[in-house]
Image 1 (cartoon, rainbow, N blue to C red):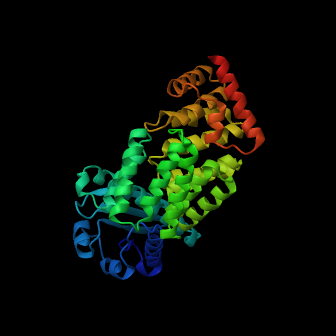
Image 2 (cartoon, rainbow, N blue to C red):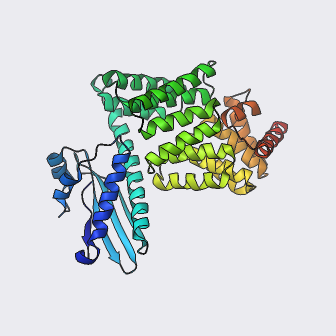
Image 3 (tube, helix red, strand yellow):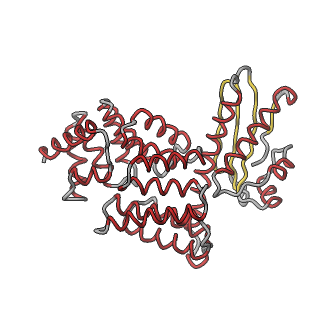
Length: 390
């Protein structure tokens, strides 16, 4: 993270650029999985702008963040760029403008958005970089990201491959908590999507691997995220919320952490707060691999809030995402049923039953544990209506 340059009166407002730089460095370091170069080394490159390849060679880093801050009247304008320090290619750029009144609040908000985007873009880049490396040449880091590439495809075959790569990453580096968290998520998905007859055993494995991650690093946000997700399968929902709250406290810029907290809050009935949190996840990572799930959470919140038309819109968007799994079809079917979009409801329900012929409300509520009785009653009624359409 190179110091942001200030364009304007350095004496009057230069502290804004330095403050934002320090805030971004601190937040990136909180993610723990990213190595961020020390402030002392980074601030040697304050003059800027620099060719990312030159900085990469000098500091031994793969990615560079740099940018410019301006004070324009009563606004602050920030231009940030993430570049690949090997190729020099710009991977992400953003221009943000905010009112220049509560500078500490604005500084924190901008830093959070920058770090969320940087995390998302670096993960995306590393997944694709790992995907083209021959398996025999993968190191622990690349094996983990090769596993992630398969993990977000949500098919049984990809889950198998993801598990293999996560285990390979652990063999190469047994101290890596992220690979254990990845394994936990694979077992969570197998239980959540009913991909095995051994659901109880998969739940236990999901919890055990998450705990293993936390034994390696109790402050790792991904370990708490994995344990919170695992607890959603069968544990008290309060335990899941507690772990996911911890995950986002440790790393507020994690889109997947924020989304997962929203997913848990949706099930406890905190629909308005869940919507606020999932909106934050979307702001942090607008093109996330979990976009379908973010839309689906918002759809279910809107449904129980009585906004059936909006619920159907978001549920339909969720089901149209390329990596959406069959549980999302169930959400799209019942939300459209509530909105009285009969043909759309029928289409989604028939597609769901073509994939899972025996699917029932029992399957739905095992995956989505809507705690408030009125919410569960509303959804169960919509499924009864869907069954009568067949």
